[in-house]
Length: 475
Image (cartoon, rainbow, N blue to C red):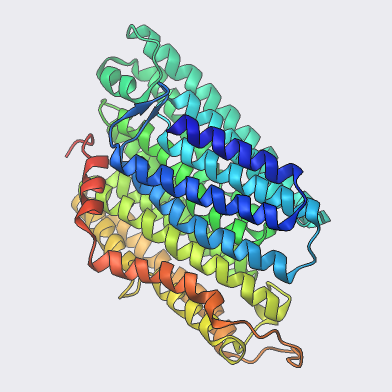
């Protein structure tokens, strides 16, 4: 099935790229969505099966694949609206949808990859396709953002490659050359600590650019800002999950060795610094999209704090990454509507949003409550469990610092969101404000509704998949 999926997505992307007919392009996008969902359902019903020697359908891959497939539907829907409301150039539309199909295909393959080198290949493919989306507007700012994204991602992919080389040396010394994750798990106890330590440092540092963690989070901030909102929604959710799964799978191997405590401390430092950086920048950032992007850095930091703490933190981290993806995608989709009304992303140019778009304003209000982990948000439950895991692992000092930083982030985030919702906009002429239909916000209500519903009523199938995904970690 993976061969059919990859081939089908490649053919669809290629036809969209060369075709300039609008109706045919949208029909092909619809066919791709059917293929994406067929592949997701097939994966769920074939847990633990292997395909093409380099792909294995495991529980974590299914969770992230289902999350991506859910977000893909509104991503294409809001892309359609984006082109409806902007001057449509057939060539740019074709490149945009072609790149988006490749991006979703590459992320799906990266989730399912069972070989670290194959994961590396598909992560590189996400960089190329995402760059085409960042450069979509063809202006000097998008060009700057694209080159910055390509430059930082190229460095990161080189670091991961060097890490894989060190890993292969460690594996060779233990009598194997198989770089699949199952082989690494089987040989974990016999791998050379020196090479493993070097490999983890390089692979982890390289993947932080996709995961949105310190030290290489910067490229993601610019990409989410410069790309159209539907693409930014994918960058801030499913693409960050690609970095997460890469680090998660390698950490799963390291956790079987004597390096576990050392690696956990590395994750604690990166996670805590990510929350710190988010707090500092959210105090002064006035660009709405960049504010949401820094909020994603904060959440990824919290997720890796949960992984590092262990215990219930493993479960909570996976729960949190699902909820974060739905929340942030919903908020990015809504920012596209904000821009259509105010023609600006600057918080100072906006205000009284309730007067111009009631449904959209409610989305932003509920989105803020979800992102700030305020009940009834499901993120309240996952964050609470992560804090509990930090307490139980005796990271009391880290926990206190994180709670203080979160208070700062919620204050800064809330101040800007409430300014947008309730304070009158300065020098804003509302004679020709676009009337945005309420149904354009319906997909965002569904995503935020999932965050609330799944937090309090997680289905048994989801709980089974999460428990299956973390079964290899020591308790």
